[in-house]
Image (tube, rainbow, N blue to C red; front, side, top):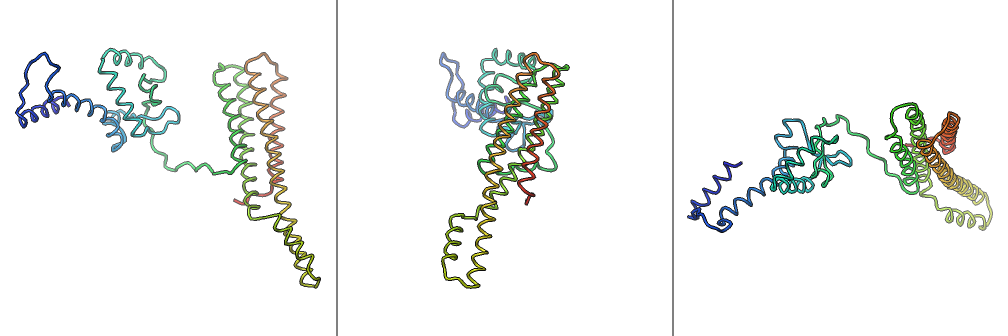
Amino acid sequence: MTFVLVGIEALVRAVTGVEAVETDESGDWVTTSVGLLALLLLAAYDPLTSRFFGATPGKRALGRRVVRWSDDTPAGLLLLAGRSTLLVLEFLFLVPGVIDLRRTAQRPDGRSWVDRATGTAVVNAKAAPTVPPPPTPWRPEPWAELVRQAEGARARLARTVAPVPAGPLHDRLQEIVTRVAACEAECVRVADRGVQLAHATAGSDIASLRARAKQVVAAPSDATSTSLAEAYARELASAERLVALVALTERKLRQLVAELNSAVNTATEVAWSPSNDQTFQALLDQLDALRASLEIVEREAGPTTI
């Protein structure tokens, strides 16, 4: 790149006729322009090569790439541009860049100051999965919120258990994590049944059905009117049962999610306070009973239709 920039400067001077002179000034406009061009090319090198080729040639040769630290997804163009700009500024002053390189090599996660500032990391490139993961199903409220609460309870417990050193306590807590994960999965299944039931009742207007049934009953009675009234009555009764089942499933799931959060709170207390085998066993029994209750709610909600 140095040779390219020197060639560009020589070309500009040849075309414009500007000669390089030694003065006390900061430099002529050609040198300044070429210097700014050099900084621009350095800052644009990483984002542009990553945008068109997936990574810089050096990173591709080493099997590395820049990703978001939060979710391990490839960093976008704007994020890469910001990261490259900070790197250029850091190494302009040399000393901060050298210190950062040394500190980066000593850190367990291998992240530089710039990576920490931009929320990125340079990691080993992973082969793209041959089969894309299934998309997360869209759920309307309140079912989506109930699923988030169950997922949050499991994630909260996992964060509590992670720093516990290996040993009997960690092994016991892992048993609790396994039970909580099973309850979370069952909560998701119950919520999905609730979504299906809600979809089934979406076209049922109970007030309109009742008004229509009353109108037929009030009409002059004959064989046709009687049959129609009976049909309307059956339609209304089935719609009311479905609506009641949706409401009942939601109430039960709310209760059981609350119990799951309570169990996770107890597990957190157990992780950081003295306990005995009876305390652990009582918590495991509580989670097993909770999962059994969730399975009952799932069965009562009816067979899946999706």
